Length: 347
Image 1 (cartoon, helix red, strand yellow):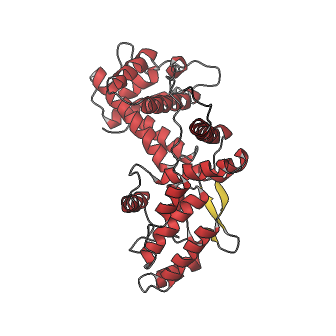
Image 2 (image 1 turned 30 degrees about the vertical axis):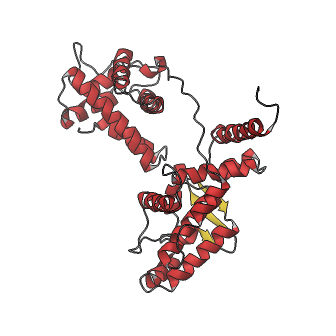
Image 3 (image 1 turned 120 degrees about the vertical axis):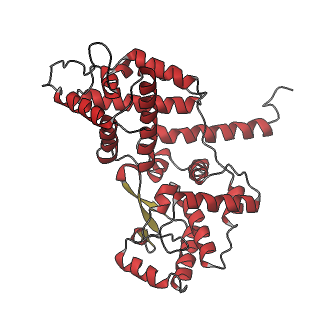
């Protein structure tokens, strides 16, 4: 399906102004393409890029002075383009689309994300007066059951981190990566984005670029530091990587964690490595790199860390995002109480 000029403009806004990650921007784009496809099918419109672009230009030309009420872009009988249908801002159209999504048996979380995409899109379009009205003001997001983040035990973490064979450079790299994920709680996208210059060994920390290009400093624990030092030592003494590593080190911009070709690892590659070690030590195969992030936060709170510090370490913008981990630690405490206290459960 050809993308529309209006949805392309929104994608550009997400990337350049809101500083969304490429992954999040792609998710929003996929949701909007699904909306476009639904409208085209429902209205029997064949999407033609030049016509859609012209309709968007018309919408922009009606971007009136503050306080004015521009006429809707759509034609008086029926819209001739999907862009016109979007700019009508019809609540009935949105409800029809949501009913269509409901027939697809999406999870509540996926439905909520798709609604959030439309909410964000129409808020953007309404502020720029590209649409006659914002239909999402009359749409309610269905309540979701609160899902607690998944965490694994310290014993399981130890088993996983000891899995890589550190007798060769790639095994040392894998151990260093896993140790870093658990030691810092950084996202896998942040891990693979690390450059050589982001590592401060004397300061025992990393400079991390998170969501919205925001930077933060995270401390490294002794185990992670030791694993990283061993990995760097192996890289510097390996003929395949030593010259390239020296170049990266001099520039300070090359990747910290190298793939077998000396280039930057992808998030998918890290996931594949993790899957391999999960199988190797017999742990739950649904454990993901993000599980290590959840475990990092949970174990910190279990051991008395304050919520604000954990928020800063995780790079959460809102404290409420971090508070979900307090529910997890409370649940663990309640489970321990029920299983251990002689009068916790009715006989």
